[in-house]
Length: 460
Image (cartoon, rainbow, N blue to C red; front, side, top):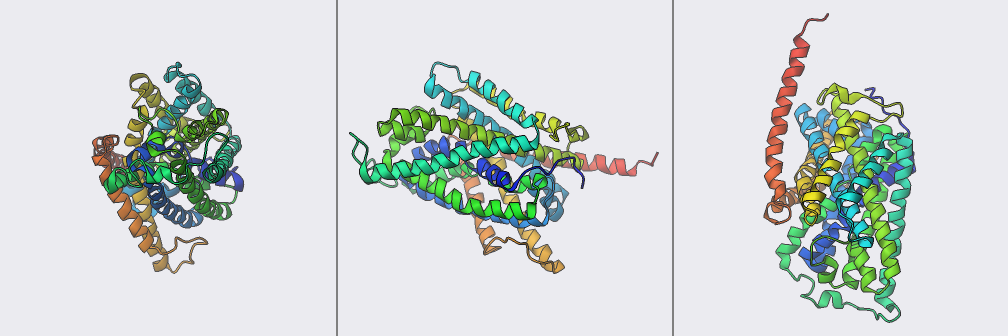
């Protein structure tokens, strides 16, 4: 189907956009919240969530190689689970990403307060909102290049962070001896708050991996989706495991978990706190700059993803047709405007509740994001069965162990989703999520009725 979008993303850009979406504030800032709940055991929690995220990446790649179309997994859900599932899937994802955009820009504002604590949070939030919105109004090629280098900064830095942290653990720094394993043997041990708290942390950590699905949405603007999408999915296997698991392992080994988590709310990245703890203030400033670019990178990617999803809904008449408008640069400008609502939400949250803005925004996005993931796995199951019935050739990349692996991933996601209702930070997910799901079903019925009425109208 002709959508007006341009295939201008190169292989290296597709890979970095996927990585940029998956590595953002959930790791650099949200890890502090997860550590406060799980303590050093957060490393295992990140590993468990990584397995689910990687299963998702492979399932998406397997389907997207066969169907590299606008709307990504939402369009594939429409094809294999029906129009209701496709409608609900895409709007769940759009809302999750819109709110997620807000959490990223709030995090960027908090990072600015590392240097200038007297600056009101809303000021950098507004400034960064304007910057990233401008980047997304330019051509997709420019967006891809901008995101490539932003994502590259955080990739290189995480590798350096792991290396520096490992060196400190082995040899210490001048005037600061190595802490050895004291960070996990003292301060309450490996599970300071118990196994239940570690499970609760899985809801926070799962949010960190939202963005893995970017590998599917970029297919409609990739020059060679059959080559680029599998390559991007495979590269994420190694990188996610390395960055999330090893990164948090270094963090909790170097800094006592109670200090890495912070005691006055989420106001600073624990990755920056590590360098302060080790007595390297200049490095802390550099690291703060890097986590700032990471937040902007994830925000940039999420705005791109959500605008393309809204545009795909307009293509199949499940959103106003006016949102189909494509600018001269090949950007769905009106869809982009809809998704900028997340920036408005962030500004309001930073004005009225600056201390709680970040966890509240995560909680609001969690229900929709996890529900969208569950539908992705359901789509993959239907996709496999349909291909087998048709006798079609297997995809060039396949999820190992499916449908067992995908079934186990769904069980974990459902359990995590239920768990969010028992956390102080994320109870908002259950206050807003189910009513919104009902609202989406009702909205679909209205859309379907209008479509049927149009079909019954006599031709002019």
